[in-house]
Image 1: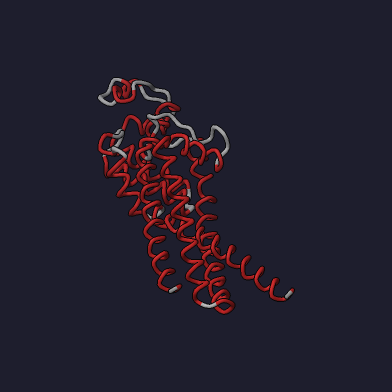
Image 2 (image 1 turned 45 degrees about the vertical axis):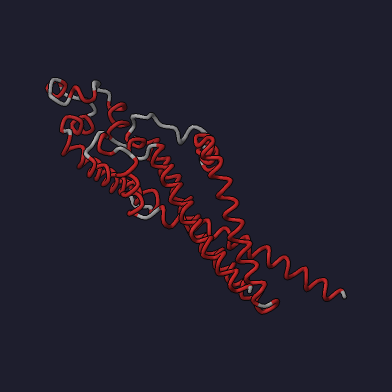
Length: 263
């Protein structure tokens, strides 16, 4: 009797662990999709109004890709700034001069470009045309989050699969099917709750998420800054939609597979 109880308890605990690992992996799979170059370019060009930004749309797309590479893949800040400087020099020579010299020359202030920025303050210029240190620091803070997120999804997916194999040996395919269905259902319920929250008040969801991941005040930027021009609220709403859609589609596939296996 005691052996039977311990065996049942072990299977129950393994089932819960496997379910949670799989649910995390299903939800986290959207991270891989959202951090691809294709996702950044497609969503940015469709939802970020890059055609009305400080640089031409194709240049905004190039900077966005450099930012993605820096924050997601951990490329150097030198590569990022090189891309931005080349684009500034191509589009606004007077602004490029300000970055190099620290201020606009008298001749530059009288040029056709002067009306575009209305100031010779380098700090003001850099926020609108480049990424100052606070923006770079925020992007650097994102790198370990993306890296840890991707690694954890892979590791927990492996643990979940191992758990399914063990449960199959201990309880047969019906238990595998039940765990798959429960994992997918859990993800769908969580996504449903997040969608409801986003529909009611996306700003509070966005704020809550950033408050958990980043130090207070390190992720707030002026609406005219280059970082916000690259990735405005509409960009993140669309990206969240892509993540949710990816997770929902995968959940449905796993839910159907679990039902088939169970029966």
